[in-house]
Amino acid sequence: MERTTAQWQAADAAHFLHPFTDFKALSAKGARIIQRAEGIYLWDSDGHKILDAMSGLWCVNVGYGQRALIDAAARQMAELPFYNAFFQTATPPAIELAEVLAEVTPPQFRHVFFSGSGSEGNDTVVRMVRRYWDLLGQPERQVIISRHNAYHGSTMAGASLGGMGGMHAQGGLPIPGITHIGQPHWWENGRPQGLSREDFGRVAAGWLEQKILEIGADKVAAFIGEPVQGAGGVIVPPESYWPEIQRICDKHGILLVSDEVICGFGRTGRWFGCERFGFKPDLMTFAKGVTSGYVPLGGVMVGERIAKVLIERGGEFNHGYTYSGHPVACAVALANIALIRQLKLVEHVHDDVGPYLAAQFQGLATHPLVGEVQTCGLMGALQLVKDPARGTPFASELEVGMVCRGHCFANGLIMRAVGDRMIVAPPLVITRAQIDEMMLLIRRCLDLTLADAQQRGWIG
Ligand code: PXG
Image (cartoon, rainbow, N blue to C red; front, side, top):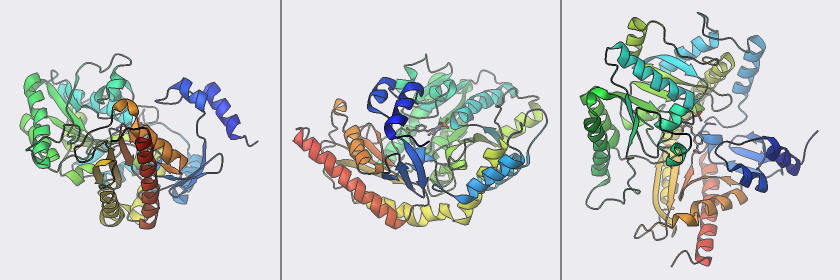
């Protein structure tokens, strides 16, 4: 029987502990119940239509309601809903997906290790890089360097690799052997005077070398980063950053890991973010866009440098998940990748809607609340500030980003607030006309936020 919104909310509050949520506050307010979706739109339990400018959670790349993915899941469920890949067995969809992933990823990748999510993928990364150095007779190479404000998941290893202070504060993290350097965030670093953005990119990459020298290169196993930091606020690095990171890793013989959980499968206008920024990782974590989020799947692409050692010298690798290579997830991923190819979504982002989004976002740079505008493919960020000319931020306790997000919610737009940075990452199938519609909503919500800020005396 169909329930009312209030009934859903009561049952939700009674039993469901949501991720990254203040349980008590949500119970008091009631969750928004999302009931169905089509294309780039969602409908809630009160029948409101919402433009989903966050692709679910950075994952529904092909948009909602794609028949090919739905049918692939149904067919595979009927034929073989589950079998494992542990005891010298495999299933056709997992083998076929491994083959297709070797095709669509950069040429150094011929092998894949499957997981159920991005977090698990990054746990695999930690296990695998340490195993690699162990097999090469350098077990003291244990340390993995990551960055502040990075997001690499929520398992013990994922949260440790991540650079979110709030996560480290709960549960005794990070685990040993993981350390962090600064992020290439021009704005947060105070837009350093006298340094161009590109100079700043080289300075920020230099922090990696400083850290390596501080620890001792012979103790460092790997560096991990998202090509563009997603959950951290769509922090697009200067073009100089990644080539310099690559040079430093090569110089010290350190493995380079690209976390492509958000950037992978077309988001940046290339198949993978490392291709957009011109670097060649040894390992690549993926999840989300591999199935467009229709079913959970993640994994790690393993570069030949590492695969060769694991295969030829490794013996048994004591690691794996029940759902490594889940046949239904792999069947959906195959249908999803086929659709990305058929609809030419990577080209669509690269040649058409990516540049279009960039131009539309640039048009917001003169809005009285907007300090910095950044886009990359189909990701965009607007930094809300008190005084754009001087770059003065709002006091963080005012939570201007949350005020803006409230207006988005009320106006049928899902946009994410990361502090005072408002971000979008719409489905890759979005059209120019739909971007126009999204921009109208964004403008309206910025104007409403500006009116609030003026009324409350937050702006001069
Ligand atoms: N790496 C990156 C770069 C991610 O963005 C993960 C790993 C972890 O994936 P799983 O599948 O274990 O969640 C992610 C996930 C947000 C938000 O608020 C972002 C993510 C997850 C939840 C919230 O932007 N990214």
